Image (cartoon, rainbow, N blue to C red; front, side):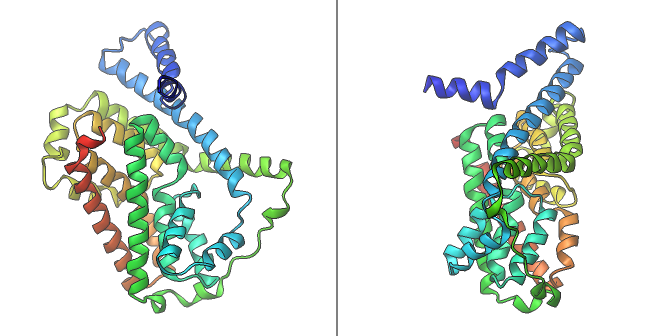
Length: 334
């Protein structure tokens, strides 16, 4: 237990980096850690470096695993299952794809075009941006393992339930016709050499970092401002877990935004520190990642308004329910 706590503190929370940045802020920049400016500078540098280190290591590892599962193989695995097990497997496969909601849509098109039920592809579409392995590790590094694992469970439940509802609604006719004529091809990852897999994993890291670095900087910057400049009373007055409307506000505020979950984590960290309800913060994160406006616009190009509305309604309702449940039982996680 002592060894686990040490590894968790040094490898995930990176206490060594926290102390190093503290020395940098005080000795090099000449700022007091207790001051607002000093605290903001420390928060920004520490969180940015920590997130990029963890993200690079995790994406490389996940991409190595992905190199053994090209889209065609994934489709074949999903095609062997029906009903609930197919939705669950689709959601689980979504967790090992480190994509934002927009970049998940081409795979959604491919899977649907290859003949998979739309309920299964929607389970994948919901879970892929919402619950990936990298975000779980980052959640644990910022909060704790209880919150990280609980987030995975509720994210998978939402993905499976959302896919099941869409499947039962028989909405196949509300998918644009061109989707069914755009099957995915064989990617050939089975023949990759060790060097190829290393190159693939490295390129995945570079590609994802290029896509999310700005959102991470913006997210950490907002987190630093909330953490050190916005009064706690202001946050709790709007987003405190005792406010019945806090989850609704957080979900609706998150929808118009577009950011990867890695950019929302520093904001979530600062909000919880300031007294926002845990469920409220998780609802905000889920709204940003699963229901961002750009991803809904992209999805509108491949499904008709009725199916898009059902998807939005089911996921929004699920996020709100999850938010209130977490607020009600936050004592179990914090």
